[in-house]
Image (cartoon, rainbow, N blue to C red):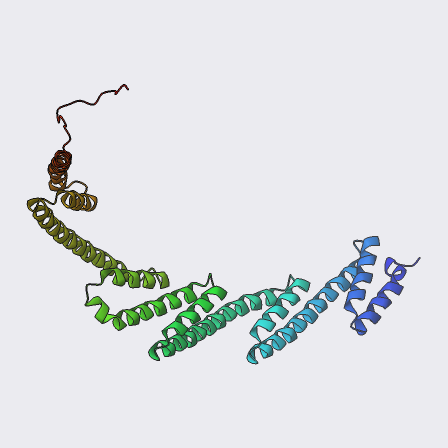
Length: 306
């Protein structure tokens, strides 16, 4: 009676042939088929273990070769392409510890390279902006910043770089307007400062300059208002003394419009108004008398029946 191994002799022969051809995948499949029928077949179990070791050795060699290729790509500066290729390999061999370890190392190196490239790019951009500013091409420097921010709206490094460049541009523009700041044209100064604030609102000195200029403008306006009120009072008194009551009331109303709480203007409107009414009444009576009209100044108005 044939032994159990004799029953599977054909399969064992096939396994040997496949292993000789280095067709480990199919050899492993045949060994599994035997163990499916006879799970405790010692010879099949030995073949299975042997093939698993050979497959591990093969896979290790394959992985080593692929890693060597990837390292060569990295040497040639193809770091991004190497990382993409590595991710593709891992998707087909997710259990390869060597590939996973190499992936972690590659990602760290790639981040370092990216940081280095980013630093280099930032230095180049900073140099470009500095060149434009030093050449007096301030508007071109601002345009360059706008262009960078439009294409890198969430890049903190670019935002910080452009902010600093704009601060320098603002300082340059402030220096160029020294004569304006030495004058008392505070409205013009404020318009200029608010224009600079639209360039970069975070400039530390602008807010202080705006506050100081607003204070100076207010003081100037108060001085002008005080001078206007003094001159208006003089004119009103003069007109009153010259019995020009109508002009006096008009001038007092102008003062009241400028200073609604001015008690002098209110008093002179009432005083000159009363004088004006009296003067008009006297003139009217004189005209009537001249035309020989009998008019009783104390007569009340009443309905005239004819």
